Amino acid sequence: DINNVILNNALLVIEKNLEKFFVAKNKITKEEAENILNRINVYVDRNKALDGVQMVIEAISENMVIKQHLFSELDEICEKKIILASNTSSLSITKIAQKSINQDRIVGMHFFNPAPVMKLIELIRGQYTSDETMDISKKFSESLNKTVVSITDSPGFVSSRLIYVLCNEAINMQREGIASTKDIDSICKLAFNFPMGPLELSDLVGNDVYLNIGEYLTKEFGDKYKPSQLLKDMVSEESLGRKTKKGFYEY
Ligand code: CAA
Image (cartoon, rainbow, N blue to C red; front, side, top):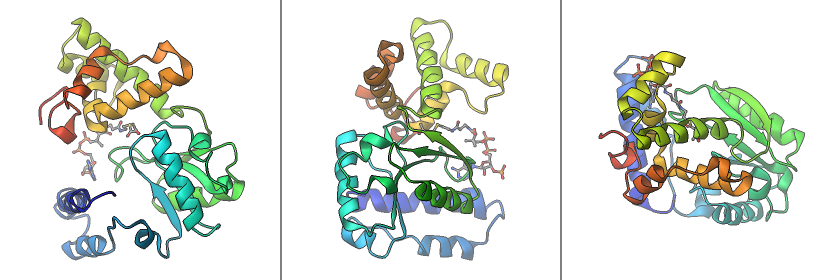
């Protein structure tokens, strides 16, 4: 990541989550949690971070230009056999790879929030991704106990294109005063057996993430995907959801 404050905070979150979801529930011992933490190294220096790695999974901000730049740098630094994956939630893998020479080793590996619990990895084949890259990425994902579903590159993939439409429509309805935040969420949970309603989900994923997805889908596919004005207002007020402790709910 770009600075040590973010990195140290990330380590604290991982430590807290290991305690809350694993040690306290007797799924692992305190010692195992410490061993897990000790296996994680954090760096701001890109060359140090990449030294000796077998695979890279990028999770930087959702900006095409910044990602293209990073991937062309990774392509220069990393040996050809190293797979370069992006955890983007919507940006085209083919376009992310456009400025790199070895586009065959670039793939989309989309994790879901909360990543330790969610079973799926949506594996995205860009226009030039090789069979070998797909194969190794699938095996790696399965070694994390995830279920892999492979798809062809398209903006928003399958997951984000679908979930964005649902969440954006829920936000539109909340703005129109058809039902309260809590009632919209309750209806989805009870009517469709969703574990979370679309508005609490938007808070979990980040309202800024959904706004990014909506703006990108609008650019690629047209006004059908236009983000709700309320979503835009919330993002400009820093009501991003759980990460700023304020969104459709207070935290
Ligand atoms: N880390 C590790 N484990 C966690 C966890 C976390 N952050 N959060 C919950 N868990 C575990 C709990 O320990 C619990 O485990 P056990 O059953 O073994 O005790 C289990 O998950 C269920 O948790 P809870 O009982 O506390 O609560 P819940 O039943 O409501 O589940 C949830 C919580 C898993 C988050 C559930 O509400 C859920 O599945 N929500 C929907 C999440 C979703 O749709 N994610 C996709 C978002 S889209 C996305 O991420 C893609 C993108 O790019 C935009």
